[in-house]
Picture 1: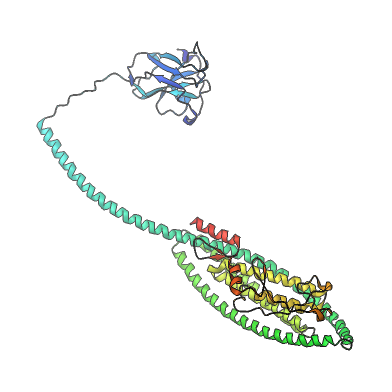
Picture 2: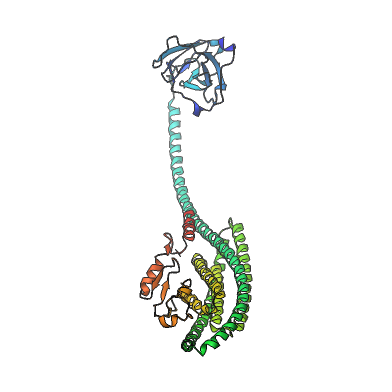
Length: 522
Protein backbone atom coordinates (compact mmCIF):
# COMPACT_ATOMS: atom_id res chain seq x y z
CA UNK A 1 0.00 0.00 0.00
CA UNK A 2 1.13 3.56 -0.65
CA UNK A 3 1.23 4.56 2.96
CA UNK A 4 3.98 2.04 3.69
CA UNK A 5 6.47 3.84 1.47
CA UNK A 6 7.13 6.64 3.99
CA UNK A 7 5.56 8.20 7.05
CA UNK A 8 3.12 11.11 6.67
CA UNK A 9 3.98 14.55 8.12
CA UNK A 10 2.56 14.85 11.66
CA UNK A 11 2.81 17.28 14.56
CA UNK A 12 2.16 17.47 18.28
CA UNK A 13 -0.31 20.37 17.91
CA UNK A 14 -3.35 20.23 20.17
CA UNK A 15 -6.92 20.40 18.85
CA UNK A 16 -7.24 24.15 19.57
CA UNK A 17 -4.79 24.94 16.76
CA UNK A 18 -6.69 22.95 14.09
CA UNK A 19 -9.20 24.20 11.48
CA UNK A 20 -11.91 21.54 10.92
CA UNK A 21 -14.07 23.59 8.54
CA UNK A 22 -11.66 23.92 5.60
CA UNK A 23 -12.28 20.34 4.36
CA UNK A 24 -15.82 18.86 4.51
CA UNK A 25 -16.37 15.06 4.43
CA UNK A 26 -19.51 13.94 2.57
CA UNK A 27 -21.66 10.79 2.64
CA UNK A 28 -20.03 9.28 5.72
CA UNK A 29 -21.93 6.16 6.84
CA UNK A 30 -22.79 5.34 10.42
CA UNK A 31 -20.97 2.02 10.04
CA UNK A 32 -18.98 0.14 7.40
CA UNK A 33 -19.11 -3.66 6.94
CA UNK A 34 -15.73 -5.28 7.79
CA UNK A 35 -13.89 -6.99 4.89
CA UNK A 36 -14.73 -4.42 2.23
CA UNK A 37 -12.98 -1.37 0.85
CA UNK A 38 -14.11 2.05 2.08
CA UNK A 39 -14.42 5.10 -0.17
CA UNK A 40 -14.03 8.48 1.48
CA UNK A 41 -15.67 11.53 -0.18
CA UNK A 42 -14.61 15.04 0.78
CA UNK A 43 -14.79 18.63 -0.47
CA UNK A 44 -11.90 21.13 -0.57
CA UNK A 45 -13.26 24.61 0.20
CA UNK A 46 -11.79 27.92 -1.02
CA UNK A 47 -10.17 28.45 2.40
CA UNK A 48 -7.51 25.73 1.86
CA UNK A 49 -4.68 25.43 -0.62
CA UNK A 50 -3.95 21.71 -1.21
CA UNK A 51 -0.34 20.56 -1.40
CA UNK A 52 1.26 17.33 -2.55
CA UNK A 53 2.13 16.13 0.97
CA UNK A 54 -1.46 16.37 2.26
CA UNK A 55 -2.99 13.09 3.45
CA UNK A 56 -6.24 11.60 4.78
CA UNK A 57 -6.08 9.38 7.84
CA UNK A 58 -8.42 7.25 9.92
CA UNK A 59 -8.24 8.17 13.61
CA UNK A 60 -9.80 6.54 16.67
CA UNK A 61 -12.26 8.93 18.35
CA UNK A 62 -10.54 10.70 21.26
CA UNK A 63 -7.22 11.32 19.48
CA UNK A 64 -5.06 14.22 20.71
CA UNK A 65 -2.39 14.70 18.00
CA UNK A 66 -2.00 13.66 14.32
CA UNK A 67 0.61 11.09 15.35
CA UNK A 68 -2.20 8.83 16.62
CA UNK A 69 -3.54 7.86 13.15
CA UNK A 70 -4.51 4.21 12.49
CA UNK A 71 -3.94 4.24 8.73
CA UNK A 72 -3.65 6.90 6.02
CA UNK A 73 -3.70 7.58 2.27
CA UNK A 74 -1.98 10.37 0.37
CA UNK A 75 -4.52 12.91 -0.79
CA UNK A 76 -4.65 13.20 -4.61
CA UNK A 77 -3.61 16.60 -5.89
CA UNK A 78 -6.46 18.32 -7.77
CA UNK A 79 -5.90 18.62 -11.50
CA UNK A 80 -8.05 21.76 -11.95
CA UNK A 81 -7.53 24.15 -9.05
CA UNK A 82 -8.46 27.83 -8.91
CA UNK A 83 -8.45 30.27 -5.98
CA UNK A 84 -12.21 30.48 -5.32
CA UNK A 85 -13.37 27.05 -6.59
CA UNK A 86 -14.70 24.14 -4.50
CA UNK A 87 -13.18 20.75 -5.48
CA UNK A 88 -14.83 17.36 -4.88
CA UNK A 89 -12.33 14.60 -4.12
CA UNK A 90 -12.48 10.93 -3.14
CA UNK A 91 -10.03 8.36 -1.86
CA UNK A 92 -10.35 4.60 -1.29
CA UNK A 93 -9.02 2.71 1.72
CA UNK A 94 -8.31 -1.01 1.16
CA UNK A 95 -10.00 -3.53 3.48
CA UNK A 96 -6.72 -5.12 4.56
CA UNK A 97 -5.55 -1.94 6.31
CA UNK A 98 -8.85 -1.04 7.98
CA UNK A 99 -9.56 -1.56 11.72
CA UNK A 100 -11.06 -4.89 12.80
CA UNK A 101 -12.72 -3.79 16.09
CA UNK A 102 -16.05 -2.06 16.70
CA UNK A 103 -14.62 1.19 18.09
CA UNK A 104 -15.64 4.58 16.69
CA UNK A 105 -13.36 6.17 14.06
CA UNK A 106 -13.37 9.26 11.87
CA UNK A 107 -11.70 10.61 8.73
CA UNK A 108 -9.28 13.56 9.12
CA UNK A 109 -7.64 15.66 6.41
CA UNK A 110 -4.06 16.66 7.44
CA UNK A 111 -1.82 19.08 5.49
CA UNK A 112 1.92 18.68 4.99
CA UNK A 113 2.58 20.72 8.17
CA UNK A 114 0.70 18.20 10.31
CA UNK A 115 -2.33 20.48 10.94
CA UNK A 116 -5.85 19.03 10.73
CA UNK A 117 -7.97 20.91 8.19
CA UNK A 118 -11.17 18.83 8.40
CA UNK A 119 -12.75 15.92 10.29
CA UNK A 120 -15.79 13.69 9.61
CA UNK A 121 -18.52 12.42 11.91
CA UNK A 122 -17.69 9.20 13.85
CA UNK A 123 -18.44 5.77 12.33
CA UNK A 124 -17.92 2.04 13.14
CA UNK A 125 -16.71 -1.10 11.39
CA UNK A 126 -19.40 -3.74 12.17
CA UNK A 127 -21.96 -5.96 10.48
CA UNK A 128 -25.52 -4.79 9.85
CA UNK A 129 -28.05 -5.84 12.53
CA UNK A 130 -31.83 -5.78 12.77
CA UNK A 131 -33.21 -2.80 14.69
CA UNK A 132 -36.71 -4.30 15.38
CA UNK A 133 -36.76 -7.09 17.98
CA UNK A 134 -40.00 -8.83 19.10
CA UNK A 135 -40.13 -9.39 22.86
CA UNK A 136 -42.66 -11.92 24.24
CA UNK A 137 -43.59 -11.89 27.91
CA UNK A 138 -46.02 -14.06 29.95
CA UNK A 139 -48.81 -12.94 32.32
CA UNK A 140 -46.75 -13.94 35.38
CA UNK A 141 -43.86 -11.83 34.22
CA UNK A 142 -46.24 -8.89 33.71
CA UNK A 143 -47.61 -9.24 37.27
CA UNK A 144 -44.08 -9.53 38.61
CA UNK A 145 -43.09 -6.39 36.74
CA UNK A 146 -46.13 -4.52 38.09
CA UNK A 147 -45.24 -5.60 41.64
CA UNK A 148 -41.68 -4.41 41.09
CA UNK A 149 -43.05 -1.09 39.82
CA UNK A 150 -45.16 -0.70 42.98
CA UNK A 151 -42.16 -1.48 45.16
CA UNK A 152 -40.07 0.99 43.21
CA UNK A 153 -42.76 3.67 43.56
CA UNK A 154 -42.91 3.11 47.30
CA UNK A 155 -39.14 3.19 47.56
CA UNK A 156 -39.10 6.32 45.40
CA UNK A 157 -41.58 8.00 47.76
CA UNK A 158 -39.42 7.13 50.77
CA UNK A 159 -36.38 8.43 48.97
CA UNK A 160 -38.19 11.72 48.22
CA UNK A 161 -39.09 12.13 51.92
CA UNK A 162 -35.52 11.44 52.98
CA UNK A 163 -34.34 13.86 50.27
CA UNK A 164 -36.58 16.59 51.72
CA UNK A 165 -35.11 16.02 55.19
CA UNK A 166 -31.62 16.15 53.75
CA UNK A 167 -32.47 19.38 51.91
CA UNK A 168 -33.71 20.95 55.15
CA UNK A 169 -30.54 19.86 56.93
CA UNK A 170 -28.51 21.18 54.03
CA UNK A 171 -30.25 24.56 54.25
CA UNK A 172 -29.49 24.75 57.96
CA UNK A 173 -25.87 23.85 57.37
CA UNK A 174 -25.64 26.43 54.56
CA UNK A 175 -27.04 29.10 56.86
CA UNK A 176 -24.49 28.20 59.55
CA UNK A 177 -21.76 28.23 56.93
CA UNK A 178 -22.88 31.65 55.69
CA UNK A 179 -22.83 33.07 59.22
CA UNK A 180 -19.39 31.57 59.81
CA UNK A 181 -18.13 33.06 56.54
CA UNK A 182 -19.51 36.50 57.43
CA UNK A 183 -17.86 36.31 60.83
CA UNK A 184 -14.62 35.22 59.19
CA UNK A 185 -14.80 38.17 56.78
CA UNK A 186 -15.29 40.54 59.71
CA UNK A 187 -12.27 39.03 61.48
CA UNK A 188 -10.18 39.26 58.31
CA UNK A 189 -11.14 42.92 57.90
CA UNK A 190 -10.21 43.61 61.51
CA UNK A 191 -6.85 41.88 61.07
CA UNK A 192 -6.24 43.88 57.90
CA UNK A 193 -7.08 47.05 59.81
CA UNK A 194 -4.65 46.05 62.58
CA UNK A 195 -1.93 45.38 60.04
CA UNK A 196 -2.48 48.78 58.44
CA UNK A 197 -2.32 50.40 61.89
CA UNK A 198 0.92 48.61 62.64
CA UNK A 199 2.43 49.85 59.38
CA UNK A 200 1.44 53.40 60.23
CA UNK A 201 2.91 53.01 63.71
CA UNK A 202 6.20 51.81 62.25
CA UNK A 203 6.32 54.79 59.91
CA UNK A 204 5.54 57.16 62.77
CA UNK A 205 8.21 55.57 64.98
CA UNK A 206 10.83 55.84 62.22
CA UNK A 207 9.96 59.49 61.67
CA UNK A 208 10.03 60.14 65.42
CA UNK A 209 13.45 58.45 65.77
CA UNK A 210 14.91 60.68 63.06
CA UNK A 211 13.34 63.77 64.55
CA UNK A 212 14.64 62.91 68.02
CA UNK A 213 18.20 62.56 66.74
CA UNK A 214 17.91 65.88 64.94
CA UNK A 215 16.41 67.44 68.09
CA UNK A 216 19.41 66.29 70.16
CA UNK A 217 21.78 67.84 67.65
CA UNK A 218 19.75 71.04 67.65
CA UNK A 219 19.80 71.18 71.47
CA UNK A 220 23.58 70.88 71.43
CA UNK A 221 23.76 73.72 68.95
CA UNK A 222 21.32 75.71 71.11
CA UNK A 223 23.64 75.37 74.10
CA UNK A 224 26.50 76.81 72.07
CA UNK A 225 24.24 79.53 70.79
CA UNK A 226 23.12 80.38 74.31
CA UNK A 227 26.76 80.76 75.41
CA UNK A 228 27.34 83.14 72.54
CA UNK A 229 24.11 84.91 73.31
CA UNK A 230 25.25 85.34 76.92
CA UNK A 231 28.34 87.12 75.72
CA UNK A 232 26.30 89.20 73.31
CA UNK A 233 23.86 90.03 76.11
CA UNK A 234 26.68 91.32 78.28
CA UNK A 235 27.86 93.53 75.46
CA UNK A 236 24.29 94.64 74.77
CA UNK A 237 23.74 95.41 78.46
CA UNK A 238 26.76 97.68 78.42
CA UNK A 239 25.37 99.36 75.32
CA UNK A 240 21.94 99.67 76.94
CA UNK A 241 23.44 101.34 80.01
CA UNK A 242 25.01 103.96 77.83
CA UNK A 243 21.78 104.38 75.85
CA UNK A 244 19.48 104.71 78.88
CA UNK A 245 20.97 108.12 79.70
CA UNK A 246 20.33 109.38 76.16
CA UNK A 247 17.08 107.56 75.18
CA UNK A 248 13.94 107.91 77.31
CA UNK A 249 11.91 105.92 74.88
CA UNK A 250 13.76 102.74 75.85
CA UNK A 251 12.42 103.12 79.39
CA UNK A 252 8.89 103.21 78.04
CA UNK A 253 9.64 100.06 76.08
CA UNK A 254 10.98 98.42 79.24
CA UNK A 255 7.68 99.09 80.97
CA UNK A 256 5.87 97.63 78.02
CA UNK A 257 8.06 94.52 78.20
CA UNK A 258 7.26 94.14 81.90
CA UNK A 259 3.58 94.15 81.16
CA UNK A 260 4.11 91.62 78.38
CA UNK A 261 6.20 89.49 80.75
CA UNK A 262 3.30 89.44 83.17
CA UNK A 263 0.98 88.37 80.38
CA UNK A 264 3.36 85.59 79.32
CA UNK A 265 3.52 84.42 82.94
CA UNK A 266 -0.26 84.08 82.93
CA UNK A 267 -0.08 82.15 79.68
CA UNK A 268 2.52 79.85 81.25
CA UNK A 269 0.02 79.03 84.01
CA UNK A 270 -2.56 78.17 81.33
CA UNK A 271 -0.03 75.86 79.65
CA UNK A 272 0.59 74.09 82.97
CA UNK A 273 -3.14 73.49 83.39
CA UNK A 274 -3.33 72.14 79.85
CA UNK A 275 -0.41 69.82 80.65
CA UNK A 276 -2.41 68.46 83.58
CA UNK A 277 -5.33 67.84 81.25
CA UNK A 278 -3.04 65.95 78.89
CA UNK A 279 -1.91 63.75 81.78
CA UNK A 280 -5.53 62.90 82.59
CA UNK A 281 -6.13 62.18 78.91
CA UNK A 282 -3.09 59.88 78.97
CA UNK A 283 -4.67 57.85 81.79
CA UNK A 284 -7.87 57.48 79.74
CA UNK A 285 -5.80 56.26 76.80
CA UNK A 286 -4.18 53.67 79.08
CA UNK A 287 -7.59 52.30 80.05
CA UNK A 288 -8.57 52.17 76.39
CA UNK A 289 -5.37 50.26 75.73
CA UNK A 290 -6.45 47.56 78.19
CA UNK A 291 -9.82 47.29 76.44
CA UNK A 292 -8.14 46.93 73.07
CA UNK A 293 -5.86 44.20 74.44
CA UNK A 294 -8.84 42.22 75.74
CA UNK A 295 -10.57 42.63 72.39
CA UNK A 296 -7.45 41.41 70.58
CA UNK A 297 -7.36 38.29 72.80
CA UNK A 298 -11.01 37.56 71.96
CA UNK A 299 -10.24 37.90 68.26
CA UNK A 300 -7.33 35.46 68.57
CA UNK A 301 -9.66 32.82 70.07
CA UNK A 302 -11.92 32.95 66.96
CA UNK A 303 -9.07 32.90 64.43
CA UNK A 304 -7.05 29.71 64.79
CA UNK A 305 -5.88 29.81 61.20
CA UNK A 306 -4.53 33.37 61.64
CA UNK A 307 -2.97 32.75 65.05
CA UNK A 308 0.60 32.85 63.81
CA UNK A 309 0.07 36.22 62.09
CA UNK A 310 -1.59 37.78 65.13
CA UNK A 311 1.20 36.52 67.41
CA UNK A 312 3.73 38.20 65.15
CA UNK A 313 1.70 41.39 65.36
CA UNK A 314 1.70 41.20 69.16
CA UNK A 315 5.48 40.83 69.16
CA UNK A 316 5.76 43.86 66.88
CA UNK A 317 3.46 45.81 69.17
CA UNK A 318 5.62 44.91 72.18
CA UNK A 319 8.70 46.04 70.30
CA UNK A 320 6.97 49.30 69.45
CA UNK A 321 6.00 49.77 73.12
CA UNK A 322 9.59 49.19 74.22
CA UNK A 323 10.85 51.54 71.53
CA UNK A 324 8.35 54.18 72.57
CA UNK A 325 9.33 53.69 76.21
CA UNK A 326 12.94 54.35 75.23
CA UNK A 327 11.86 57.43 73.30
CA UNK A 328 9.88 58.60 76.33
CA UNK A 329 12.94 58.23 78.55
CA UNK A 330 14.99 60.17 76.02
CA UNK A 331 12.33 62.87 75.97
CA UNK A 332 12.37 63.05 79.76
CA UNK A 333 16.15 63.35 79.68
CA UNK A 334 15.86 66.11 77.10
CA UNK A 335 13.21 67.84 79.21
CA UNK A 336 15.57 67.73 82.19
CA UNK A 337 18.34 69.27 80.10
CA UNK A 338 15.94 71.94 78.83
CA UNK A 339 14.89 72.69 82.40
CA UNK A 340 18.52 73.16 83.47
CA UNK A 341 19.20 75.23 80.37
CA UNK A 342 16.19 77.41 81.13
CA UNK A 343 17.50 78.02 84.68
CA UNK A 344 20.91 79.12 83.37
CA UNK A 345 19.28 81.41 80.80
CA UNK A 346 16.89 83.05 83.27
CA UNK A 347 19.38 85.84 83.95
CA UNK A 348 19.80 86.53 80.22
CA UNK A 349 16.19 87.20 79.28
CA UNK A 350 12.79 86.03 80.39
CA UNK A 351 11.74 85.56 76.78
CA UNK A 352 14.34 82.76 76.40
CA UNK A 353 12.85 80.99 79.40
CA UNK A 354 9.40 81.09 77.75
CA UNK A 355 10.87 79.62 74.59
CA UNK A 356 12.43 76.68 76.48
CA UNK A 357 9.13 76.13 78.31
CA UNK A 358 7.31 76.06 74.97
CA UNK A 359 9.79 73.47 73.67
CA UNK A 360 9.18 71.33 76.74
CA UNK A 361 5.40 71.58 76.32
CA UNK A 362 5.70 70.65 72.65
CA UNK A 363 7.75 67.54 73.46
CA UNK A 364 5.26 66.51 76.14
CA UNK A 365 2.50 66.90 73.57
CA UNK A 366 4.44 64.74 71.11
CA UNK A 367 4.96 62.05 73.76
CA UNK A 368 1.25 61.99 74.60
CA UNK A 369 0.38 61.78 70.91
CA UNK A 370 2.82 58.88 70.43
CA UNK A 371 1.16 56.96 73.30
CA UNK A 372 -2.22 57.79 71.87
CA UNK A 373 -1.13 56.36 68.51
CA UNK A 374 -0.07 53.08 70.17
CA UNK A 375 -3.12 52.39 72.30
CA UNK A 376 -6.09 53.95 70.54
CA UNK A 377 -6.64 51.90 67.43
CA UNK A 378 -9.68 53.83 66.24
CA UNK A 379 -7.72 57.15 66.07
CA UNK A 380 -4.40 55.85 64.71
CA UNK A 381 -4.40 57.72 61.40
CA UNK A 382 -5.86 60.93 62.80
CA UNK A 383 -3.31 61.15 65.63
CA UNK A 384 -0.48 60.36 63.22
CA UNK A 385 -1.48 63.44 61.27
CA UNK A 386 -1.52 65.53 64.43
CA UNK A 387 1.97 64.29 65.30
CA UNK A 388 3.18 65.41 61.87
CA UNK A 389 1.70 68.84 62.54
CA UNK A 390 3.53 69.03 65.87
CA UNK A 391 6.75 68.01 64.11
CA UNK A 392 6.13 70.72 61.56
CA UNK A 393 5.74 73.28 64.35
CA UNK A 394 8.90 71.93 65.97
CA UNK A 395 10.83 72.45 62.72
CA UNK A 396 9.50 75.99 62.48
CA UNK A 397 10.70 76.58 66.02
CA UNK A 398 14.16 75.28 65.13
CA UNK A 399 14.39 77.64 62.18
CA UNK A 400 13.43 80.47 64.51
CA UNK A 401 16.19 79.47 66.86
CA UNK A 402 18.73 79.98 64.08
CA UNK A 403 17.74 83.64 64.00
CA UNK A 404 18.87 83.98 67.64
CA UNK A 405 22.45 84.16 66.35
CA UNK A 406 21.63 87.40 64.55
CA UNK A 407 19.87 89.24 67.37
CA UNK A 408 19.00 88.06 70.85
CA UNK A 409 16.19 90.57 71.05
CA UNK A 410 14.20 88.66 68.39
CA UNK A 411 13.49 85.80 70.82
CA UNK A 412 10.45 87.50 72.28
CA UNK A 413 8.78 87.94 68.90
CA UNK A 414 9.61 84.32 67.90
CA UNK A 415 8.07 83.13 71.17
CA UNK A 416 4.86 85.01 70.31
CA UNK A 417 4.82 83.32 66.92
CA UNK A 418 5.32 79.85 68.45
CA UNK A 419 2.54 80.40 71.01
CA UNK A 420 0.21 81.62 68.27
CA UNK A 421 0.87 78.55 66.08
CA UNK A 422 0.54 76.21 69.04
CA UNK A 423 -2.81 77.75 69.94
CA UNK A 424 -4.04 77.25 66.36
CA UNK A 425 -3.25 73.52 66.29
CA UNK A 426 -6.23 71.03 66.41
CA UNK A 427 -5.50 70.12 70.09
CA UNK A 428 -5.56 73.68 71.40
CA UNK A 429 -7.89 75.56 69.08
CA UNK A 430 -10.96 74.18 70.86
CA UNK A 431 -9.85 75.34 74.33
CA UNK A 432 -7.43 78.23 73.95
CA UNK A 433 -8.20 81.49 72.18
CA UNK A 434 -5.31 83.27 70.47
CA UNK A 435 -4.79 86.66 72.12
CA UNK A 436 -4.38 89.71 70.01
CA UNK A 437 -0.79 90.88 69.66
CA UNK A 438 0.74 94.19 68.84
CA UNK A 439 2.55 93.72 65.54
CA UNK A 440 4.86 96.60 64.65
CA UNK A 441 5.58 97.76 61.15
CA UNK A 442 8.64 96.11 59.60
CA UNK A 443 11.82 98.03 59.04
CA UNK A 444 14.32 97.43 56.21
CA UNK A 445 16.72 95.78 58.69
CA UNK A 446 14.05 93.24 59.78
CA UNK A 447 12.43 92.57 56.41
CA UNK A 448 13.43 88.91 56.62
CA UNK A 449 11.53 88.41 59.95
CA UNK A 450 7.99 87.11 60.07
CA UNK A 451 6.72 89.82 62.47
CA UNK A 452 9.58 92.33 62.20
CA UNK A 453 12.11 93.49 64.80
CA UNK A 454 10.30 94.84 67.90
CA UNK A 455 13.51 96.41 69.30
CA UNK A 456 14.41 98.54 66.33
CA UNK A 457 14.33 102.25 67.09
CA UNK A 458 12.09 103.15 64.20
CA UNK A 459 9.39 100.77 65.44
CA UNK A 460 8.79 102.85 68.55
CA UNK A 461 7.25 105.62 66.56
CA UNK A 462 5.63 103.60 63.72
CA UNK A 463 4.06 100.71 65.66
CA UNK A 464 0.48 99.99 64.71
CA UNK A 465 -2.10 97.60 66.00
CA UNK A 466 -2.63 94.68 63.59
CA UNK A 467 -5.33 92.07 64.34
CA UNK A 468 -4.07 88.60 65.27
CA UNK A 469 -4.15 85.94 62.57
CA UNK A 470 -5.35 82.35 62.36
CA UNK A 471 -3.50 79.80 60.25
CA UNK A 472 -4.99 76.57 58.85
CA UNK A 473 -2.89 73.64 60.23
CA UNK A 474 -3.46 71.62 57.01
CA UNK A 475 -3.08 74.00 54.06
CA UNK A 476 -1.33 76.82 56.06
CA UNK A 477 -3.73 79.45 54.75
CA UNK A 478 -3.72 82.55 56.98
CA UNK A 479 -6.98 84.17 58.13
CA UNK A 480 -7.46 87.45 59.92
CA UNK A 481 -9.15 87.69 63.31
CA UNK A 482 -12.26 89.05 61.56
CA UNK A 483 -13.23 85.54 60.38
CA UNK A 484 -15.73 83.77 62.65
CA UNK A 485 -14.98 80.50 64.48
CA UNK A 486 -17.60 78.68 62.44
CA UNK A 487 -16.06 79.74 59.12
CA UNK A 488 -12.61 78.78 60.36
CA UNK A 489 -13.86 75.32 61.48
CA UNK A 490 -15.67 74.80 58.15
CA UNK A 491 -12.45 75.56 56.29
CA UNK A 492 -10.47 73.06 58.38
CA UNK A 493 -13.28 70.51 58.02
CA UNK A 494 -13.09 70.80 54.21
CA UNK A 495 -9.65 69.12 54.33
CA UNK A 496 -10.94 66.10 56.28
CA UNK A 497 -11.73 62.96 54.21
CA UNK A 498 -14.68 60.77 55.29
CA UNK A 499 -14.52 57.00 54.69
CA UNK A 500 -17.48 55.85 52.51
CA UNK A 501 -17.61 52.47 54.33
CA UNK A 502 -17.37 53.48 58.01
CA UNK A 503 -17.35 56.55 60.31
CA UNK A 504 -13.56 57.07 60.13
CA UNK A 505 -12.22 60.52 59.15
CA UNK A 506 -8.73 61.27 57.82
CA UNK A 507 -6.58 64.30 57.06
CA UNK A 508 -3.79 62.55 55.13
CA UNK A 509 -4.70 61.43 51.59
CA UNK A 510 -2.25 58.47 51.69
CA UNK A 511 -3.66 57.17 54.97
CA UNK A 512 -7.20 57.59 53.59
CA UNK A 513 -6.33 55.58 50.44
CA UNK A 514 -4.79 52.77 52.54
CA UNK A 515 -7.91 52.65 54.75
CA UNK A 516 -10.30 52.43 51.77
CA UNK A 517 -8.09 49.71 50.25
CA UNK A 518 -8.51 47.63 53.44
CA UNK A 519 -12.30 47.89 53.00
CA UNK A 520 -11.97 46.68 49.40
CA UNK A 521 -10.16 43.55 50.63
CA UNK A 522 -13.21 42.61 52.73
